[in-house]
Length: 230
Image (cartoon, rainbow, N blue to C red; front, side, top):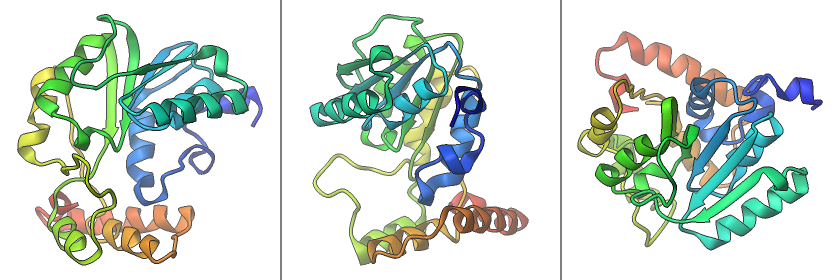
């Protein structure tokens, strides 16, 4: 993509969204953050993929904070390969005690990492490091009935780690740490079957997964409470 094409992040979604089983959540979370051009963005947890994308899309600076040294090495390698290493900053630390100053970032995103955190400590920290008017987004698993059933049958995706899907109680600090917040659930009928198929090497194509989610959320919106099982 040319620099002008990158400036439309996260459109086209087929080019920017990489997590197919959670494509709808990733797209909505990215779109919520708004324009990235010139901003200072933080990826909280993960291998630095989002940070490198923001830099390619025109962010002035991107940071990664993760407790995993291997993830830092991965982020550095990705940034070097993409030609944006000079604008990447990496810090080894935890979300419960982010070792950075107040009012520092325009936006913070966490892709599938909040459910590894102690949210009553992490959420106030995220709010602290954001500039006034800054935005935070995340995409994480919810402890829905299908999660409990799926893990009993197929096992957890990550074994022997602090990994607890979000619940109403665990997400509550989001609403006390930020003046405005929203939780959206999706994929009631399709997300966990798609993940189950991937365990057997069957990966649903992006375009098909996107259409399935669209139908899924529409159908589940007709039945009161069904979206809340996503």
